[in-house]
Length: 249
Ligand SMILES: C[S@@+](CC[C@H](N)C(=O)[O-])C[C@H]1O[C@@H](n2cnc3c(N)ncnc32)[C@H](O)[C@@H]1O
Image (cartoon, rainbow, N blue to C red; front, side):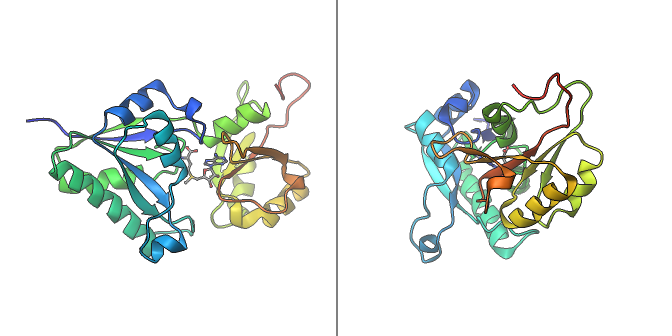
């Protein structure tokens, strides 16, 4: 019997040139490529969802791929909302349908890396519950944090420095706790907490580097002190406090 594989594929921050050769090969070989698609008002009204960033990258590196869009809520509220649960169920259903229809390889393309704040682990668990024989694998991708470090010339960590990654879903209090023990702090999902983040930076007397749409033609790299608002695709890097050696590239 043909074996079935579900592969979470990291497609990097948005630049097709930052997709690994292995990722491009899996996407091209897959019978079906599931992609999160931005949920728009149109989608909620029953029309097709808009292509999301992962889909744009997949189309660029694997032009013939059979893409299936999965609705995905950008309203990144904390916790498991009913809408989010629906999106996970839709992904699992699409993967299940593909395996039932005889697919040997189903890929799930995710921005950045599938092991970093991606829904791939939920999808894999849901699919395994229905198809226990499906083999699950991950192809790593370049994270937004790494892409921002490169684009801004900010080394993430040197020597024995500690790196932390903080998702800013519910406010800046955990950021302060983490920053007390880490040297460099990267912040994901800062969108709804821009003013609190700026206040925090002022209080601790440091500026941070913001990367918006890193790795895309709309990329912007700016100091936190100069931004008024932050979109969903923004990452903030508080670099380690370094001496005259190291520091900036
Ligand atoms: C659900 S997490 C996904 C992280 C992704 N799996 C990774 O490995 O980077 C979404 C967050 O990643 C960050 N992000 C993803 N792509 C980005 C980009 N191109 N530019 C800036 N930030 C990005 C933002 O902080 C965004 O809110």
